[in-house]
Image 1: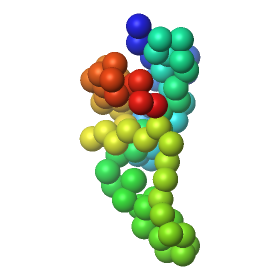
Image 2: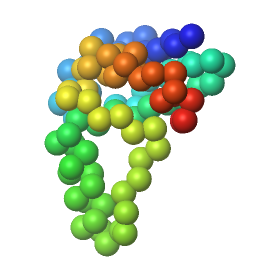
Image 3: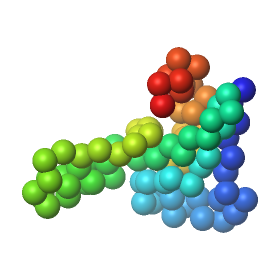
Length: 91
């Protein structure tokens, strides 16, 4: 069973999350496991990667990364639900 737990007050600051293009405040429960995905929109992810390399780092890594079109509740929830059991089991 897949359950997504959102912060109780998420709707109060959802507009900020979308503007920032990044969010890590969701907890996904799947078959007794707790997974905290990190959502980025493509623009923000590109900025993070560029900043990482500009600092001279050799690689970019973000555990539990999910890229969505926009960091809205609908897009993030759709991504969580769209991942197959096989996908979640590899996390």
